[in-house]
Length: 454
Image 1 (cartoon, rainbow, N blue to C red):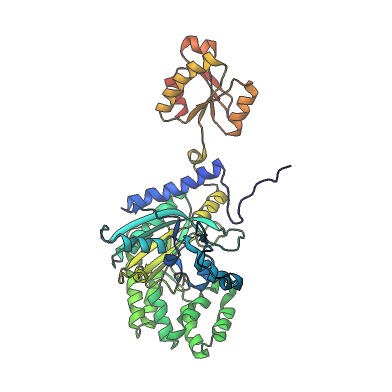
Image 2: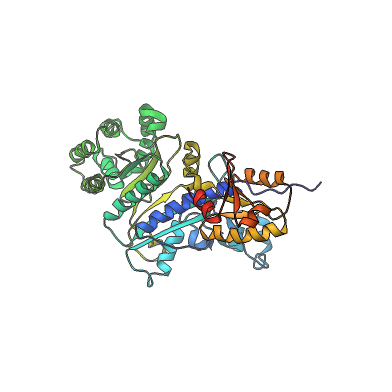
């Protein structure tokens, strides 16, 4: 017996129903991006390794899928190099390209390459797959989609406000209740300055980012292990445990960070974003969260993260402000701000909460039963009118037994079936059967369309 085929670990097939759900997610996000004036671009699945390498740190470089050169890729290699069995060195010799690791670096490359064609500020979105040679596990895949939107070439905080409006609109459309968490890299820098540990900002934020998971005592123990003094840790306590409304937190920060110019700048920026969003009366919860420290080495201003309120799951959207997206490609000083929706996690949340609209996951709405050649020829005329009315419809291709055709309709969850026999042909009508209730009626095609459309 032939061995059953398989797919690479960390990749997935998607059924028609799963694809309908995924497309509902992508189309909803895409529609909202369009509402806010974002334009779609696409970049190749593979990039030159020179574009990708060195942009994600040593660990990121190890997770890049490298593509072997075509042709005689051993030419130019010495016997000594081949026998060295140095995988990294050999790969650099016969791999010039790699699969993209994210959408951000290819976007930076795109901006630099097309800077003479782009009008700034440039509002772009991308919905494409990315690949990482990660260890597959539950919820972590080697191939997955990112849904990114960025504005580059503008320092205005109105961009941050609009991106949060986009987040609010998308999750309102999905029916998912979320908390939008906001922080600022400058506030975190100011905190590190005030407690006298400016050079330990990364260690401090990595530790306090774990507050929800490991608790305050363990956070303090980790800070001590990183060489942060007891005096500094003591000063940090009221900041870590800061509570109250967003306005109360901001007032406290204005007092605590009064001696830090950078910290006060972060408070000012955050105050503007929060107060503007409050005046716009967005529908979801907004929270200033000082323990939020995502992508600290990358982001330079506002930081965002979105948590679902009714499902236990990690962040489902994230993003922030960065000051030098294109500098690594020779175009310094292009500031930007962006967000990325986690399509796979949103898929899981919508499934758990059963929030998919019925018409988003349904395929065919009406099936014409095949009773033979004459009946089918007549049915095709009716079918054309039904499709012209925007109803998804099909005819069973073979004159099979009625039981088989009905089983097909049930398997595909088709809500209506059309029966066309001699009587229907003589009267120029069809018998419409509701598969859920079992009711059936002899109707004109126009009447059937009305019933199906509700």
